Image 1: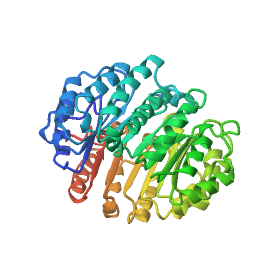
Image 2 (image 1 turned 180 degrees about the horizontal axis):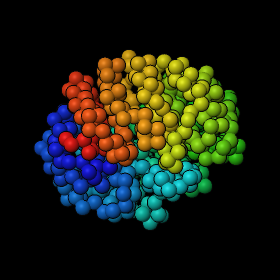
Image 3 (image 1 turned 60 degrees about the vertical axis):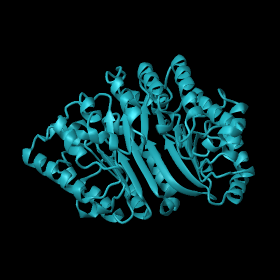
Length: 463
């Protein structure tokens, strides 16, 4: 992703970085040393480093140096290779107290590019041997770190159990109970056949007695047991995030309506975040949603028009509640952009309280982009639009210029400008100059707390 970015581009980006901002990088970058050796790099509040290839990182020594020098760094790891992840996690043990967040993303997301079945790809994950090694090191980090506030375990049950075990042991140890209070967000992979009752017992302690505010878990047979726990003692839990990976009658565990009502009484402020991933072209069953809870976030990964139609139709009653919406088509992975049905547009128009919007793999015109920016500019904090139709439709040659007018000044948190690899097919020098000038011009004016620029926007611009 960063392969052809000239060092001067990175230096120009550094001019606009402040203590409040982050930088997104990739292990495929030939300019790693340009990024990490820049003196301003150590002033960053956080740096997200995505490892998206299976090669061993040649700059591990530099990363370890960065780990030792940066005192408030947030790391996001994308697990793709046993050697990489083990070295990185072992490097993290150098400075336990510098770690605030760890995201372990499933390797399957990389394999999705060559597979049609999202469910199989997402669960491909790591080998058992690799998973065990990573789990051991991660358990050590969780046990020792005093300021770890977020752990995302991807979809690996072995790692989930290791993390839960470490947190559970800290809860049982009076000497380290204070340290456990920093853990607010926990994302777990659950599988009833692999984890069983011990999983629920540990989770009971974690939910009831820790400072947990956000819990993400798969919708499976363990969910009903977890809901029993929340009914009895919801603790500090404010958000329950459920991931439904396979929507069909056999995979959905129907929850008794009385259970949802009990939760509504015991935790009246509990919010629901729902992620739906289509793997079979089936209809959406109303039993998966609880009307007593407030739906604040909805993410949909779809393959068929039937699926997205059913989702939009069913959740149209809750669109006014949504603060976060993600619409992602598998067409992006299959290089077949999806034309969304018209009811998606109507759904967006009714979602007046959106603060975060993410769209990828969906056919969307420049007019649509500007309409979104205009309609939501007052409340929108994050806007991420990834388009897979640039070369096919030639609709986005002026994309960045149109994405940064005055309507977007309300974006105070994140701006993500992404044109993916198709950008190299645009060879209009005047347009490239306008994009280059406007990009940095608006960076000057916009008070961003987080800056995320995918540099393929800038490559071949002659900066």
